[in-house]
Image 1 (cartoon, rainbow over the protein chains, first blue to last red):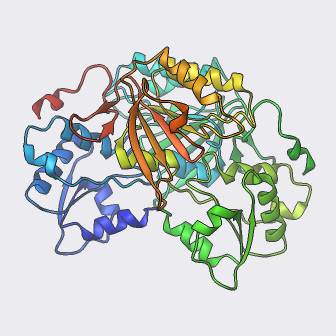
Image 2 (tube, chains in turn brown, cyan):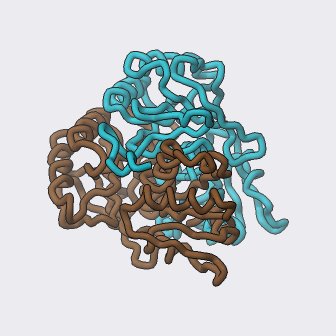
Image 3 (tube, rainbow over the protein chains, first blue to last red):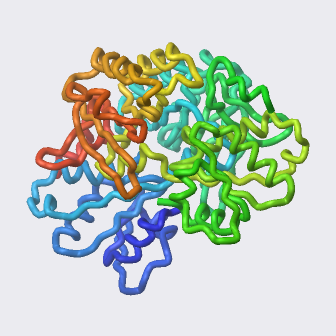
Length: 242
Length: 242
């Protein structure tokens, strides 16, 4: 699912900077390319490492999964630039190349659950207070948005998803379709449908994106296709002509 | 910005169905491929035409711009399938291939304005009541989401964007960064920055995606980079080490 411009940037780079697991997925790399792999959750370290390399004139690619602009490396790269004390960093020619974010990849596999107004929310309270997340979930639920959750759960954050599910159940019926997309676009990909009533945190891990439908999200009878129609309220007259 | 799987699907298809303008952008096509181009806003007609062709055993590609799952053709295709009276339509092998949606493409060009929680909202009231849109805007604003607006304005919908801007100004300061991305990824691409205080409907047309920052969205001093940091509230300690 990588766009050709991203493939070319990887092919052209002298240095590849990224989370170890994602760098391995970005291959094949050339023997003359230098790989700087680091651990997960070292985003800012990687961003600074990339600027340090690029400031010396090297051509550097920072690897991100999905779309770098959606809970991925682009914000970290710009945080690093914003806080730069090394003037040479400002001289680096920076290009951000978009991609298919996990929610859009999972949505495509199962239909079009994000085919109408939706929110994307990270459930991680590592970098924002849980109270902000709860407030946003309340608004997203009250506004009847479909939602996709990134970073839904981890060993260090075991209870947050359960609280989010409980909140959503106060706003939406138990039959609301839920899509669990895990490792979409990777060899171990799985995408499955459940409902808000049946969803439990045990079905979800940190590599899963969770999509919760709005009040209009539907499963097509007898199929595994889930979609949120383009219309809201009254279906358009042309639909009746089917 | 088209993913290789989408390129391959287009190359492999016998019939290409789509909005005339987008079909032209999807080229090059082969002389032995049959093009079924239709006017804009004929989504359901195109979806049904594609199923009719595919039901006869033809290999059909339905062209969409951006990501078909985000205010594009995938929902229309599934609405057609959901309402199908022709049993052969159920037998069609359907694959939806994701892409880079306009908001993500525009965001990448200008930085990472959608690097934190965000909403995507269509401002078109063709298929949903304006009251629903206003309610969603209120919730998105109160929840301090960054937002991207699709279908922000058209000749038939001249006043809605102005009302949306007025609503947002009651929640966010005039300095809030706004990104206007037009025809991103196409030859006439333009991406520019303004503020919520300066934004007027005259700056926007139907080919523009409008991104409005949250309270934390920033422009990096002396640059044209806009981003929403990963953190909210208190910046992480590592940021201070820059």
